[in-house]
Length: 308
Ligand code: ASP
Image 1 (spheres, protein in one colour):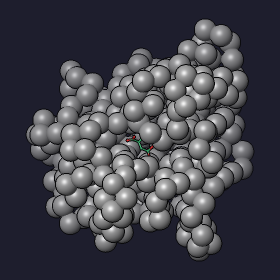
Image 2: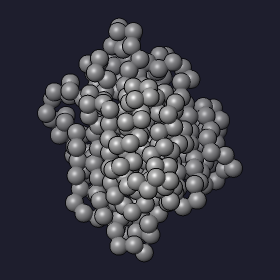
Image 3: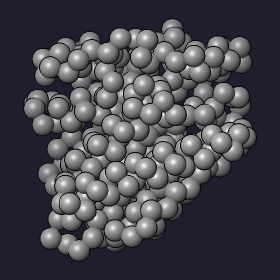
């Protein structure tokens, strides 16, 4: 066993300037802090990194403040289509779902795919059928279609915009995609990302959160990474895998890797978003090209820190 664990979570990237209401900002920070402490308990008692990221991501999916699970944003048809991915750094096992509806915790379905199927990624009806096969209950649409999300979609349609949950150009931007990365007491790494995607997206659009190497990645030899922002930008640059490769093949630490990866992301395509990373030694780092990213971390079992 190593002597310490590390944990990072994020709740979405964007401008967030228009979260003017201090009470809402406090709710975000408090939610992040609570989930960090919840994850700490798992890791401190010897739970695995996979267990920690799945559990933390599930907590965030259950919180309507965030754009995942019950707080997912709506597509152009006013429907919820969620993406999620999880990866185990011990053996590069991975599971993911794309464009799934009726599933309260897509990250748990991703884990079931990782552990129990011969596949990595299932989409739409097929993912739902696998959920039923595994005994996962199907959750009615009403659970997901909150009044805030309906208003946010209407506003996006007025502006004819496809936007990030926290986009600079919108008004009702109070929620964000979620992710968790962890290193457990045995030095094993894992990552998970879950999202409703972007507001007013086309039916069938799939983002980066479920794409291994784009929105989620973990390898014990390098690091655990979760991203948030415009999924298309992360898919085009395979940014999560790139950050990992910088650690493994360039010898960078988490800080060096996220800085380098973000420079590349900005320079190549003007990429919009951010990422969190824990390297194989447990160092925590984050970087973003957006103005802000809601995130928090516990490095080497120390105090929890949250940033908005
Ligand atoms: N990356 C997510 C997507 O494009 C959105 C987000 O991070 O807020 O689906």
